[in-house]
Length: 426
Ligand SMILES: Cc1ncc(COP(=O)(O)O)c(C=O)c1O
Image (tube, rainbow, N blue to C red; front, top):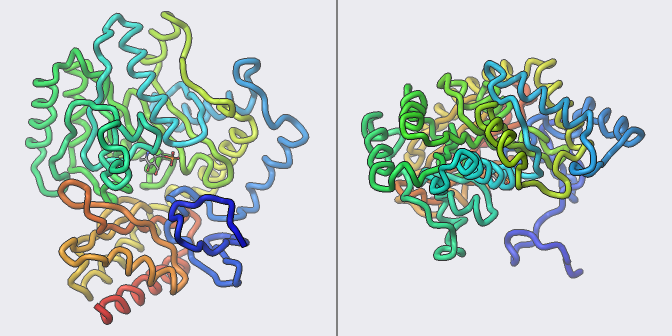
């Protein structure tokens, strides 16, 4: 039968998922898969969480949609208040809601440009980002992303900014990172740079790469000195994934603008947000008084009610503490798998955002391990790595926050078996 639905690989025959409960997804043949990556690092409460039904039922009888240019809603206001409350020192006190992480990036870039324009600094329109980065698939977000695999079809037509930060976060000393940033700012001219956008822990483009101690504190100082806004892309890291509400919390650093997505809707509703401080919003409020971003479904009350329930469950069930605990268990297990084979270079990450970096000199290992895991009933997520972020040699392990210790052991068992099977047929 002809399939009218377009999926990423046009020549692949995708199996259909039919039901999903907890950390398991079941396909059309009844086969069970442990969701070891929360889909694309999004389904943080697992599937069919019983407490997630409530907002759907409640909103249906109350209000499911209202256009944000015509009305506000209790749901959007409450969610923005909750996001402010969980941000350190209530620092991110305003939220602009969108439907995806890519849109949150677009809004963050626009707000940064608008902020400087409202202050009369109209030449500040460019952005610095990392070579190893992914900020979204829309043209602006892809323009500031370094993910080569996702950019390559559009090279030449993407937004050109100053060059990207290229130093290796694991290998190179802190001083070299700071010198590189200073040098880019110096030859581009700080009067042209609106912001620096970074993922606190690099996900799809860095295999859960974690910067050194003191890194963000020092980067923030440099940004402040040169009047460059720090934009934290917390679409993957935000709302508990790394064992704290925001990834930057680990470095006790505040950004000026922060994006969240993925775990905000946790797979139950498409919602993301661009958060900002009073310092960013005030000049815009007092100036043009208008944020020129947004979409038909921005601030969708049902999505906001769902996101509020997600945050309530994370808090009530103490899931962030649980993420730290099972994250340690998972990390220890991954490290012990590493010793059995010579093609795993390193295991790293924070909380339940963990990455396995494979030796890029042995081609095809990433695909073989992912396929073997799938065959054995485990879902994991591909990421890229290497000096320029071009090597397809990373695997992200990021199960739902609700994974139990027994399910974590099961994940490790299937992964270990799959890696050994690949090693035997190499
Ligand atoms: C760090 C980061 N930013 C932005 C995005 C884009 O989010 P979305 O796919 O919801 O548009 C992603 C998606 O993987 C991401 O990992």
